[in-house]
Image 1 (tube, one colour):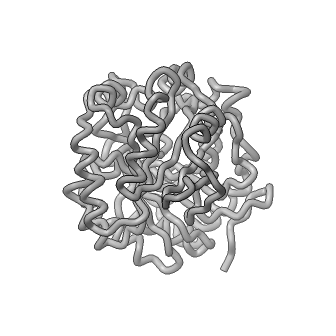
Image 2: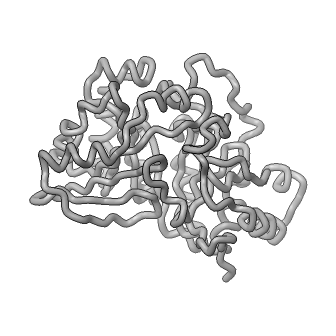
Length: 327
């Protein structure tokens, strides 16, 4: 079996698959409140097209797939797609990123469809602050979704918190205690300059080194590890089962170990979150390219994967917002 290796010796074994660019929240650092430039449904990859693409990646050695958006649960019949992806030979890790607003309705079906892990975006435990960050979101729906996922048997459940200076950085300890109480894993994330909203949010940028030092005043942190293909560096709170991941694309980038690519809802393969290198897969799929042609196009694209992003050096470089790229 051919494996995907980029020009810098990094083995690509992880695909983040966006199934929609739409979302039922409007977090101020992600989607502009008045944004209307979403892809039309006829431009979305269909389930059979997605299955073809992921089968090609699996044949090339990719083992991990994360379903993302936008908010993936706004895509109809998502558990059906998850079932189809989990049945592809070679795919042994199928996970989902969600805001959990609709998770209470879908948790059981997703678990039965062999989704193994769930990441939930949650930036505040204060209902009014959550409403402000998300432009109207209701915290109780997210908490209900989390509890439904726990009851359905998902483990681990990871909480992703974008820590922003002057917005929610005073909630870090509370979020740690919340995750200890509910046996969740916690990951802190630095803001990134993705599109105009991301560049505005960078005004609230806070290095996670600051957060780690604050936590070390309250908790004993020891080295920890977690399975998965993501970029987090983990510590564990001594005396508990809580593992805390630190995702630091700005203060300490992890490009040298990048093992992932992203596919947007319209079939664009993005080779780097912070660059514009890409391959349009939808025209190939709809113009009759066979399986081997799809694989060869992917191989040639990976040969163009850049060494690293340039968020610090060129924050204006990426004009697409995060929901277009895929989370």
